[in-house]
Image 1 (tube, helix red, strand yellow):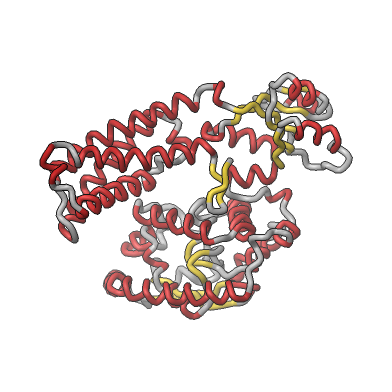
Image 2: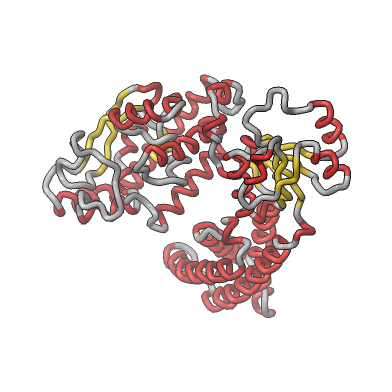
Length: 457
């Protein structure tokens, strides 16, 4: 793992992104410069054209999940999505040409074919290298509980991590029944494996550590070049959520990223309000069209007002475009949305899919009830029930809620206590690690969800 702008990124994943960024620009420059006439007519406008096309290609690749670990390591999936990204780019460029700057369409088409071949070759090399054991780091997991099982499962799904789990070590015979994992013996086996060079990383994933960790012997291994990872922290890096069973208030108390000065909070408030005003002006025509469609589709109010719980447990009124039939929001029948929810109106299904029903919440941001990014606020009755069943649930109230959030871009709607527990683990990860970088990543993921129609039910 390497740290880029407060984010932990696997070395292979970072290398793939940088390599393909350079590859896209280099291929397009070569394609644009082909022919003597092109070299003579090379101007500043040509540079701008290449940069526009490259940006569109990279954005399409991002939207099609080409940098998802499961896709990046699979040649067939990568190839099909590269073809889709090239196709979407060829559809988008003429639109940009019509709106702003003319682009040589014939040269662009030839450049797209060349770029598709180059990207396919780069993905082939990446998947071949990722599959070779020689390029992986052998690791031993110390523990046999749920945390250890989750870490091993994540590592097996992520070839970009360069990790190969050799097995587990644990006291007692219970570890021998650990599914699909080789049992290497008691923790004493670590010393032999490390001395022989068969283990270069130790992942400590035991629940109770007091009196179980021989500090002096472990330090001797660390000075010899063996790396140690805390299981709960590694789990956060791999999944983007906290391990709830090991989470406590002290995790936030001692988190450096959690503390924000008064000046930072004031600046955030001013920037959020300014951005909300600008977004409201830009989105005004769309909001007007949506309001008219709602009124024509079904009788009743256009704007839905609901009481939600915000920062520090304070109640506030949240604004949304009404997407359900009149009366569906009554407390007696209030329930999470489901797929093809019969309560939704015809217009409501579409505005929920593309998250257009959330646009009136720009007024909540201007009022100071919400930010753009933060945990989603729920109705009081639902929150009260979840507080009773999920430990540390009320910790999500210590920050201001948002229109979108880290949990929303990963989980979507929740219908059970277990679903909300998982969603809380994402919210707590955001609260613990919130930063401008994490907010920017959340906004990008939200934009991708909206563009691909992966929004509300």
